[in-house]
Image (cartoon, rainbow, N blue to C red; front, side, top):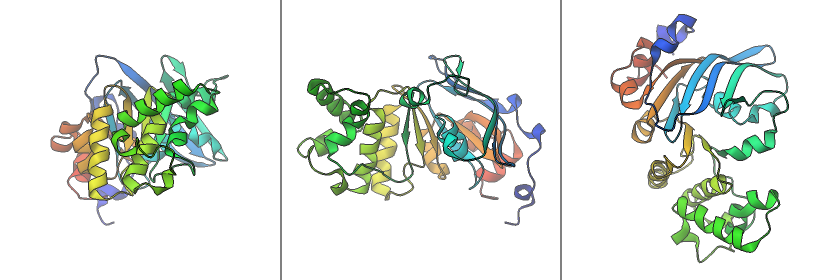
Length: 277
């Protein structure tokens, strides 16, 4: 990397409310991230990030590798709690309560935050059991409820027609794209408020990627979606708002079209035009 702008860490003055020009939702704010900092031991990974995520919209997190996108995403359902030496400051508010406050039920929180990972990770069980798994863990055993949830979730994931005649076959026999849609179905089976996606198409071919992108567009409105992507073209296609991160800082947060065509910060412009990254 030779670009001098990319070699210099952003100063605090390079980000902030003046660089916010995001699309708002009539439904309001789903997640309110305020001055959020995160350390792994002595190493600080996130610096004073403030990000109001709008309900029912798709928010994309973009930036070069190692900029803190996935770290921030995983902080939203406290998956980073599993890392030794983790420390945080600041707040992540959901309906006015801080998810890092004392006495928060982390399991209940994660039910409100569905998660889809980079690589499809179906369980070694049937398609039906994969989708119904979150309900079974929660103690739901009534077959009519499980049946209804499986069908509703697979339909929402645009997978019902492909899977309805093989519900009791192993999910491991599905194609990669089908497996990822199955994981999305599993992620929404417990009817979460927010769906977190960590590069959901990076392991898929272009045809499967197009299906996932179409699905994301269909799910928007019903769910608030926050997705990490390395693909700027993907962010441009499916997101309403885009947050550009660099070296652990939120540099610019705005309506996607504006971020890509008329960014307010020179460092954002350098990234989206390919000067570094």
